[in-house]
Image (tube, rainbow, N blue to C red; front, side, top):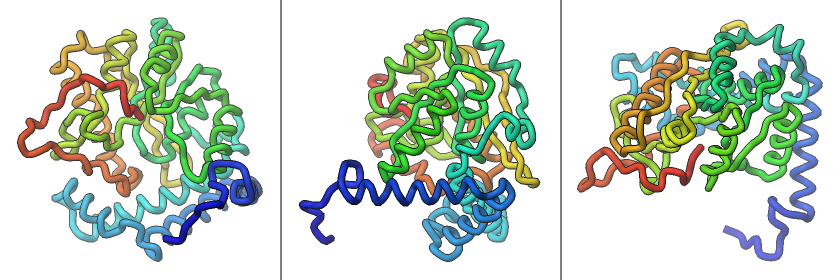
Length: 322
């Protein structure tokens, strides 16, 4: 690889940083000029290019889908994969034009189901954890909550390049969303819940072995953060499953499901059972719309050591939450 020594980093000041900011600004300006329908059409084209021309992780995606849905045919695997890439492209385009969203757009394009569940949870005074996954446009529920005046803190991680991350943070602030970085965020998350806020938590990401515990996900061990269960029991906050679906007509359904009560204690076995229950909710949602989950994520990359039992310990679980 050519040496980059002496060149300004993309995350700092200098020509590269300004160049990336200009590119992001042009892309956002272009996205803002597109209608909702045209942005969706461009998103589908982008997804087709990623999955069919670039073939980004396509063989790996197809193999993962085959393992998770052994009852499906090869043709059905391809349909799921094609739908996933299409959804990915649309989500990227929608992110570019989030600045154009307003309450009128929400009322026209979003079917919000179960809002009373979230309001009832907040009425308890201990906040609530929104259990979600990378389904549909997974960023949209937080934006909609901002329109409705609900207090939301999202657990996030920085995206690259840094200029895109800067744009994304600015958009979140416009919607009234607060964020905490997933690394070392446990105390900040507790504080948000004790302030009676909704805490957005995506539970479908692979964890390092020292940061997670193993639960079953589509019949295979998946290293998962126990942070959600620990936060729930320590703050006394219920867990509310929230998922966003993309409908065939291009509009959305945001579905808020009945709240799950906090675990009764912090024993490792209890935390393990709660994390398994949350993961089962995520799996059930993915099975309903498998073409809208991000199969390119290597969810099963971390596996138990041969000499270790599948179940891990909950110690150190405040690290690596997302």
